[in-house]
Amino acid sequence: MHSPVPDYLAEVADACAVTTSGEPASYIPELATVDPDRFGVAMATVDGTLYSVGDARHEFTIQSISKAFAYGLAVRELGLEAVLTKVDVEPSGDPFDELSLEPSTGRPRNPMINAGAITTHAMIGGPDISPMGRFEAIHRLLCDLAGRELAVDDEVWRSEMTTSDRNLAIAHLLRSHGMISDSPEEVVSAYARQCAVLVTAEDLAVMAATLTNAGVQPVTGQRVFSGDQVRHLLSVMLTCGMYDSAGDWVSSVGIPAKSGVGGGIIGALPGQVGIATFSPRLDAHGNSVRGIEVFERLSRDMGLHLMEVAPPARSVVHATRVEGSGDDAVRVLELSGTIGFTGAERILRRLAEHPLEERRVAIDLSGVHALHGPARMMLLEATRRMRLDGYEVHLVDPDDVLPDPDPGDGRLLEPLPSSV
Ligand code: GLN
Image (tube, rainbow, N blue to C red; front, side, top):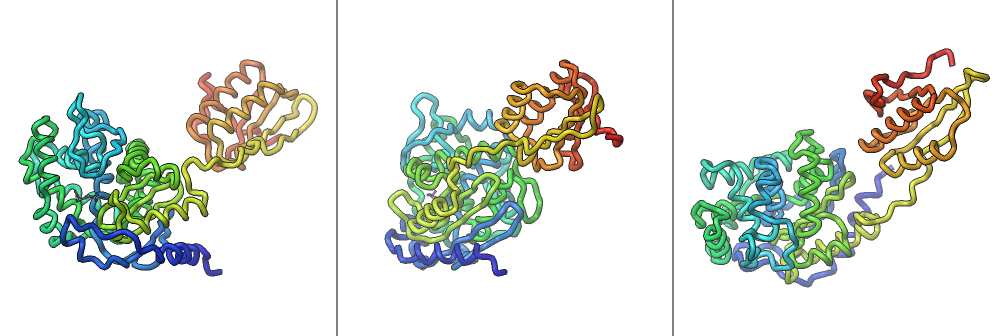
């Protein structure tokens, strides 16, 4: 069978290709020279499968999409608390290049607008690193995320430096508030070079999939961020990634995302897919017009909105049966599916409301794919209490979904004796 997924992506791209509104960014003169009709869409799964259509292998500059990853690097290097002292995580409702800081603290409002991105950029690599050393550290990170060596567009970099008055003004303002200490010219130059790294939509989809995959690059297997760092980064992308249209984006698309004036948008849906689009025609906020359309369609058609309410969880107690008879009879509770807090609550409620008649009980996890941390604790606590109530509790766990089954009373749960 030929997978319908690429055909579906092509259909979405065709439908959005008719849109020709918006213009490539021109405040960076070199960006105005790109072909406005280029259009590519790519999607990468958590196991590293890549689907793409159109110009998904055409290189363009990453621009502000780099801000999300550089912020992740700052958090990875310094810890969230230290980063928060200099950059807040509040959506600003302002354009990306707004010259403003939080009045009470002097902090930029979030790391996705230029003021926050220049500050996070300048935090990387410790106090003794040179400005270009900092660029190199961020460049290394971007290459690790893409799983290949990425080139830099020197023309776009130089071009941005000829028109960077606004970013220089922001950097001067930041230094006057003690948010950066290096020379504004040097910091802005290295930051603009970070924005001039060349990527394709395919690269970006894999980079997004690394976030989707809790920080592990799905193709190379390299751990780039920890799960906690990714959760924080995705939260900030969701609320601030699309600048002053972030609220619209959350309600119509609902996927943590980041756009860049090079025409790219990435979206990372936790545990599912990384998506990237490339189309240089931008709206007034600096976001790709066709890119937004693609995301809106994918979100709607494929049910990718983060707030999409999942069908109500079915009972995780798949079946119960009795093995043996008389005093030796064992009640086997067969659990199934992926068990999180809600599933565990159902099991506990059932055990609390309908005490089992048999004195011997086995919890059969053969049909369980995954047991989340809190569900594991809840299940173990239930077995501890059942033991206190006089039950003999066993565990059937051939796939080791509940390793180290210690209910906390010093006696590990044992498998069912083979005589039963
Ligand atoms: N390099 C650009 C700038 O700093 C990035 C802006 C963007 O992509 N929104 O202005």
